[in-house]
Image (cartoon, rainbow, N blue to C red; front, side, top):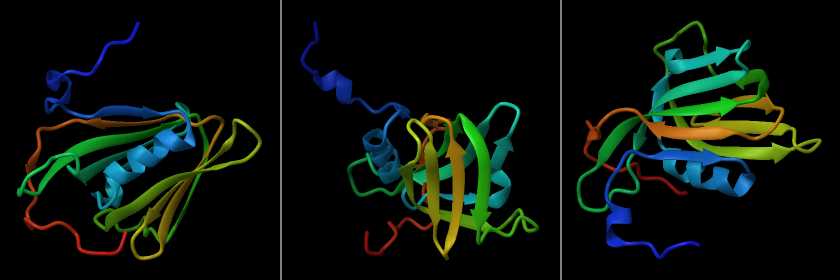
Length: 153
């Protein structure tokens, strides 16, 4: 039996979300839009079949006038191969900005998780099955710029 949501259910807590289908992934994509990370915070672990990114994401779920960021771990599991475009791996300090995360189905349940980055960059993970998690790993902090990004969505 399910219960109705309560006011306490809306209390601020660190995010810990999972996506097992394309609809779930759209929620995660919205939450990581405009997240930034240095290229050095991308870790591909072929033996574990895992791709992880340590992001500084905007807290879009936070209402009010303050602009906050939080460090979050975006993990893609069941990864068979990873490819990239427009990411200079020789410069680990290059700052990347995430525009979106999407899933393209192939032979079910296989497919590709693609992160579109600002400046024509992309990161693509071929997956055996879609399994993506987003988990906040630090306390929120004031965004250094104090401003929300201003661009068309």
